[in-house]
Image 1 (cartoon, chains in turn green, yellow):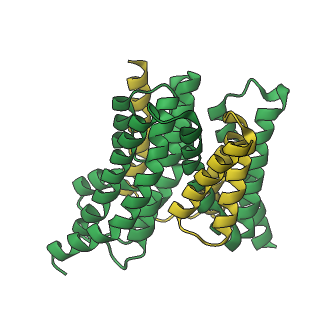
Image 2 (tube, rainbow over the protein chains, first blue to last red):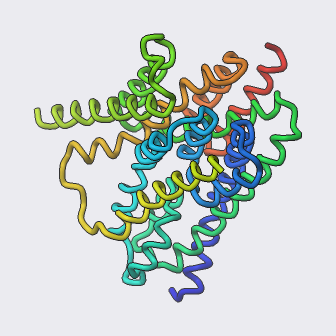
Image 3 (cartoon, rainbow over the protein chains, first blue to last red):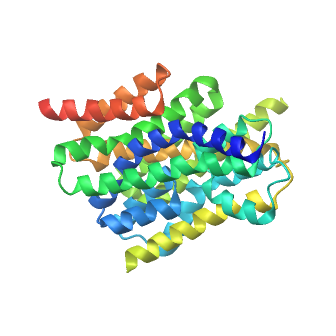
Amino acid sequence: MNKNSLFKQGLSDGVPIGLGYLSVSIGIGIAAVGGGLNIITAVLMSMTNLTSAGQAAGISLIAAGGAFLEMALVQLVINLRYALMGISLTQRLDPSFTTGKRLFLGAFITDEIFAVASSRESVNVHYMYGLAIVPYIGWAAGTLIGASAGTVLPASVTAALGMAIYGMFVAIFIPAMKKSREVTLAVILAALLSTLFRVVPFFSFISYGFSVIISSIIAAALTAWLTVRRKAA
Amino acid sequence: MKTAMYILIMAVVTYLIRALPFTLCRNKVKSPFLQYFFAYIPYAVLAAMTLPHMLFEGKNPLCAAFALVAAILLALCKRSLITVASGACVAAFVAGLFL
């Protein structure tokens, strides 16, 4: 395929992702305004971050007045999966991916873009350009709509729309739990631990960001250790 | 100003996590423990964020509980991300009308 048709193929593959992002980022925009950001900073955050879980945690942390180091660590842990996706995707890149293009297109690795790109035998830069455009625009536009609407819509509506992003998280981990008992264990452990940190007064010194980090690392490490032991046995 | 600093930190950290391994690494992770750890961590993070947030952050935890149950049921029926996300919103809104 020439670069034009590769680009068009990517563009059309990106449309469903972009539509999904548009609806989810409306929730992010609403959450951002609810967390004290204005419309400009909310959209700026989406245009420079392009990550639902990272931004949702970032907004909570900004609202809570967390430390800068805490913010950096939260983003590091929550977005660690992108490092693995990036490594995995390098196995499929064709020679059109020069170092400069990797540095640029690496910024657009999201769960969905990774999933669609990985389903191809080999990935060309022009395909990747096309694939990234619609989701990127959808993410920024949805944030703009949500942040604007968040200031005029009644609280009952914005509260309900704020559930969108968490609904999407559920839609990501439930199918994975159906496929793997280990993922099920990791999910249940992480959910219980982070809830425990919020409920038990003894743990009240642990902030929101660190409770997410600590519970997910314990849950994933413990499950990984059990898996290694079970496969070895 | 402080908000801009937060956003800058988020953007730089997130960019480096994405772009550096994508640009530099050409080999696969060898350690089985790390392979599993990396495979589980995304789901663990999402779960750690979802349950406490839904139950304790909102004004009405019951609405959030309805949203959570609706999302889980729709996800179990293999609905798309958009359907599950909208289903959670609708459930929370409808529950809010009655509770």
